[in-house]
Amino acid sequence: MTLQFLSGDEWLADHRHFVPPDQALDFFDVSSPQPVQHMFGRWRGSELPTGSPLDGLLEASGWWGKEFLDAETVHPLLFETASGPRPVNPALLPVGVLRRAPRLAGSRAALAAFAAVRPLLATSRPQARLRMIEHRGVTTAAMVYDRLPIIDVFRRVSSRTVLGLMDLRGLPDPFFFVLRRER
Image (cartoon, rainbow, N blue to C red; front, side, top):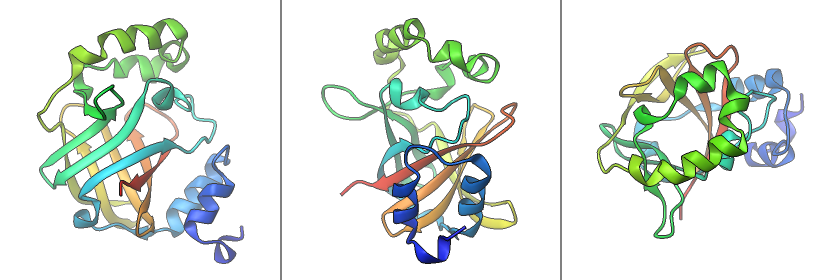
């Protein structure tokens, strides 16, 4: 691996279309820990495709990113609307379908149904918290969902970019995503 010759942002750009899961984990492991307070703000999200059954699902459903107002006030899922990114309540999403039948969740019919009901899932209440946790031997910022078996773990790529690893109970391999701080 040639991580020492590339900046983290260059590595992500070189792998934006696909990276084998073991290489994504290697990159995650060599990336710096991210302090909780450096997560505050609004972040635009994108997926890092690794062959996960969840690849493509968030972006196809209109996912915009995440917002961290403080450690106790987190909007884990912002979706694009005509008036800008808005938070939805992730506890109302069919997470069980994601684990058992991700291809079904990504079908045209399921995505169309989600687009139709998404306005009903909107919320102004926080749905997650930020904590420092130890993951893969490193203590770093993580987002803990209030009512779902999901922890998103973050590693610093640059001052404006973090790599996220979604740890979903029952999903055999992690799902990777990238967050870039909104200007």
